[in-house]
Length: 373
Image (cartoon, rainbow, N blue to C red):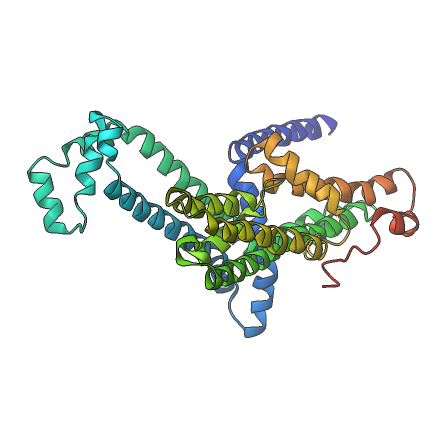
């Protein structure tokens, strides 16, 4: 009997290792899927009050998050292409970067591209260098696009089925319960993960709204030559950039100020730089500092310390790569929850008593909770 159990245990260990290896290969999309799951789960459950089927609610929850992000990225790429074309038309790019890229200048001549113009350019051989360039880079483009599509598909499928069957997975894990330790740990970790990751989403939305209002108000009072281009897009990107640790929103509004000030410097109208300096001061205070002080404590979760959470955002991308931005907070929450629940029970202590004693010391005075908000 013991030999059979040993064989079953070894087989289960082998299966777990294989599954773990496969999961490690796709750790980035799986991490993003977990983030999206906890970000959309509240909306998924609240839609149930309208008697909407679960599959439709899952699609709606993903669409309300995914479609705006995809639209934002597509709009950004479109604007980059438009501005690149204007730059090519204004400056002699083909002459400055060499004869090997003269096809760039040829494409710039198609100022109002239409199907007939593209057909005529193809027949005349004007597009041959461009086609040759695309052919040379076909392998890289194909691998990049296929990897992007695969990761996006994994994110969508895993998030969709977590929304549908996450409760079943939760119930199955509770069958492993032993003296209520596993149950308490899973329920506490699940609630804290939802509070932290859902709080991240709320923080992005709030900062995006504040940034859009600030950029638009600046354009109302600033002269046309120093206006912020595309304030709505810039504000949305500022909100997303707030997820990046340390640098954060500065990677958006500082380059915006630089781009805005370049024409003024070239035009020798240095007096207008006062508007750009005022823009930097206002954004640094209204968008970057005040929301971080007032909003982040509300969105920091129920028990997770704000400082530890910020350190997780800082060290996560350094240790794990870009997906560490989502993975590190998850690991932090799981570790702190284990220390507060399962570890105390394993040491023979009552977490309720120790938690009451530590409550005032573990959380800074004045820090608010997401549930209070």
